[in-house]
Amino acid sequence: MVTGLSGPISLGWGQMKYNVFGVGNALVDVQAHVNDTFLEQVGYAKGMMTLVDESTQRDVLERLDGVSVSRCAGGSAANTIIGLAGFGGSGAFAGKVANDEVGKFFVEDMRRLGVRNEAAPVEGGQSGTCVVLITDDAQRTMLTNLAASSDLGPDDICRDEIAKADYVYIEGYLFTNERNRAAALKAMEYAVEAGVKVAFTASDPFLIQYHRDEFLRLIEGPVDLLFCNLEEARALTGKHDAIECAHEIHKHAENVALTMGEEGSLLMHDGEAIPIEGVAVKAVDTTGAGDMYAAAILYGITNGLSWRQAGRLASHAAARVVGQLGARLATPFTAEEVQRIVNH
Figure (cartoon, rainbow, N blue to C red):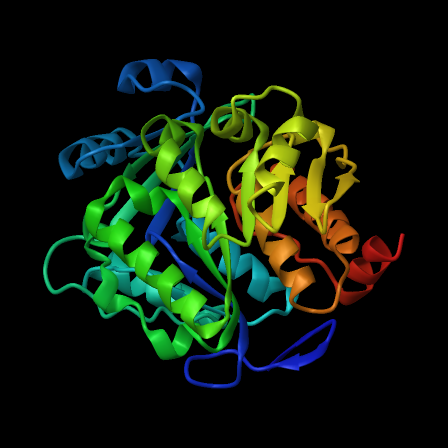
């Protein structure tokens, strides 16, 4: 048992109702500090996420031999569910791993944090990894090999488990793969049938180049809460001003959470624009800032906080992640800190 602001919440599969059911790529994050020369040698654009094959990923990992690395269960939606659990919320996750050492590490790491991974492992093959190359300017360049995670399909989505959640949370990265896309759409379908709200994150501006029309249809349809950054919002709406972007999306989505980096964020709820101030921090690593922001928003709105309070908590949580290495909070928020932030 863990205790959230609203009281004791039981974590685990098949138990009492939980806050969020996440669906996304199950990846083990391998994080390493490198210099710009290393990036030039491997030949990938700084600050971008690139899908790579297994041999390319193996080559990059071999180049990191002798470099200090850390690893943890990750993937965008998984990071958000882990963050939610860290605040004291209850979450479950559906993502696919292989029956190998990396996959077992993923499952055990999630379980240790109180989140169970529902999808059965793939026999044979390799589990997915995301190599996160962090440079001194806090930019992170991600090389993702989906491997077994690309096998997540609609049969891995459990209707009964989704029905127990307040929200289902879907990452946009799933739309790069037809089987993953089918799983995402099935989760949304089950959520709508059960009266469960749908939260969706655009994930990355590059996705909108290829999936803009479909993302817009989802926003106009099952999506109740859209998470996006300003660049993604501009690509979706064709507008430039943050408020205009948010208002345009809010015409269709009940709620919008639009992040603007150091400038804070903008929430749209019940026709109201709620500006949230950014929190000053010396940037060390931007990995997972958006995922943690979503975690705090989802925790807040499913545990009795107002949207403004949830936004304040999210702003502080994202800043704390940016000020450290990795997507998981090295120093979790205490209950007293949370109360102080939301009641400020």
